[in-house]
Image (cartoon, rainbow, N blue to C red; front, top):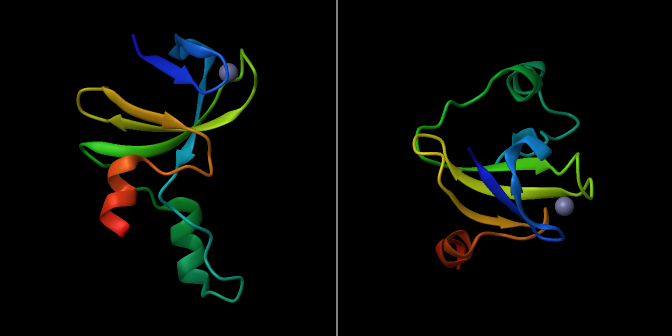
Length: 94
Ligand SMILES: [Zn+2]
């Protein structure tokens, strides 16, 4: 069973949360082509390994959070608020 650390409530069972979406994606430009919008809405990457995701603590504080999870082992290596960035991603972008 997954245990997710909510920044406000602490560690909780994953059954208190719902998966939101891939946190690595961003909205296309409003004037983007129909092809780009189609890809944004319907195309998903099936990542094997570390993946950054949005989850909501629906049976707790209802806050949205970011979860960095290994999709193969289900190890959760980081959780934070939606505006925060995992430490290794900060280092990689600087
Ligand atoms: Zn919470």
